[in-house]
Amino acid sequence: MKKNGLLVSALVAFALLFAACTKEDDKNETPAPAQKTIAGIASADTSFSILVAALNKTGLTATLNGTGNFTVFAPKNEAFRKLSITEQVISTLQGADLENLKSTLLYHVLGSEVKSTQLTNSYASTLYKIGENGVSLKIGIAPVKLNGTINVITADVDASNGVLHVIDAVLTPPTVVDIAINDPLFSSLVAAVVKAELVTTLKETKNITAFAPVDQAFKDINFDLNATTKAQLTPILTAHVLGSQVRANQILNGQKVTSLNPAVELTFNTSSGVKLSGGKTTDASVITADLQATNGVVHVINKVIVP
Image (cartoon, rainbow, N blue to C red; front, side):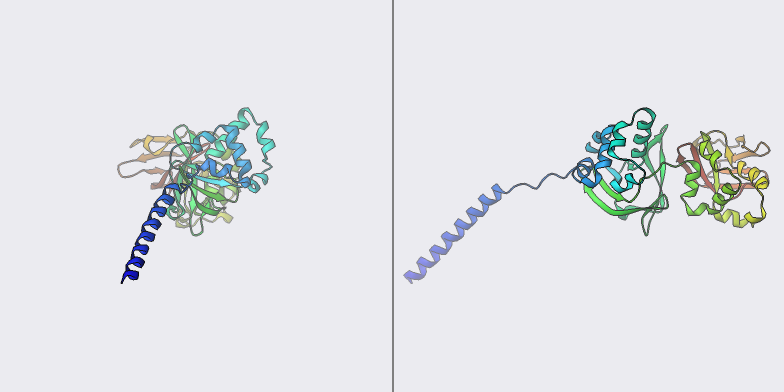
């Protein structure tokens, strides 16, 4: 019995000693390292060295090191090199070229954190702003594609101030024409603009509003592009364009505006959404409004304006 008592006492003492050592070890444990910011993650990975050089040159490193909830679509070095953009090239930029670089980088950033599972077939407003309005980025899912062609190759890299998605190309801020090109819903419109040789004009003209009919709108009027000449296309397409940028909240009920086709005056009805009539077309509905481009704004409509 005496031996058993000694054994029990020894076990109790050992247990107490083990517990004390465990508590001491807990005190001495190294705390987990703080989560890096988005800029910190990029800086720690040499495959983002060109992106880091661009952020430093444009002064955006502080933004992506700061507080907030950002989503960054981050191109690796290979994506920049495809455009002949290197760290050396970036170091020489100044003036308008430097501002263009900054705008392009801001076009890769959303002002809120969006994980890959939260992405939807939609348009997102980026931190590259025209006036007060963020330039639109087309997002497609299953698989995730940006502006129709750019892939997310690594998703959901968590940062302390948001999330980073790695992409395989540099995003280019879109003109009104590019918005149509980047979205498969506008294949008929794009083909018509190309045939009418209006691509350059619509890309280079500043501060315009384009009412963009979806493919179904062309099908509804049995539109035959092959049977339509350039001379016939031009008055149709220019009837969809205004010579100034007008966002949906600036359109007034009963407002009349002459399009770039001087023979077509558009009349607006805002009693239920935004509708427009002009030429032979009545009550075309704006189904998606305010897609911001670098040179104007696009409103998606469900009918073709026929002069």
